[in-house]
Length: 150
Image (cartoon, rainbow, N blue to C red; front, side, top):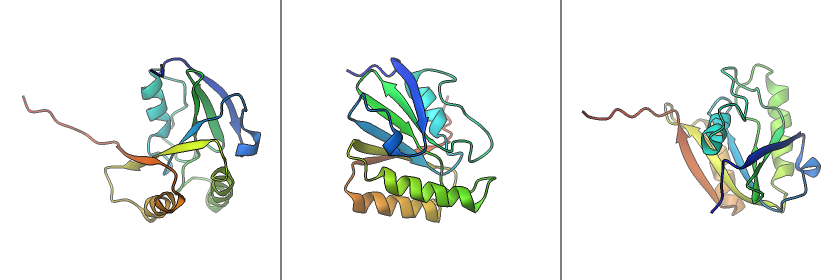
């Protein structure tokens, strides 16, 4: 069984060609800016401040590699959609992701969608891309609230 608390941040990289090489498996976390990718990483690893969280969209600009129990890299991708930096970031995201999906180490994708809103065009486009790519993926809906009945 994989121990997610045995985790170490390895590096940030502008593309997969600059990725660490020790492990041969990667799982990518992707979604809109500010959807909760860093919060998910912190929750999975039970490390409160492993991945930096921010209330401002577009904080993550590189691929962030986390070694999970010397079994695989969990890779935090920059968010797509709105950012304070505007269109240039979106162009860089598209190029980075196109190159990343040529990565032979990619074994799966965790696609995060904000449950408080209808999926955006970017969410739907990325979902369509994943379906066509034949890469295994799961969708996680974030930011939901659940009220328990007393």
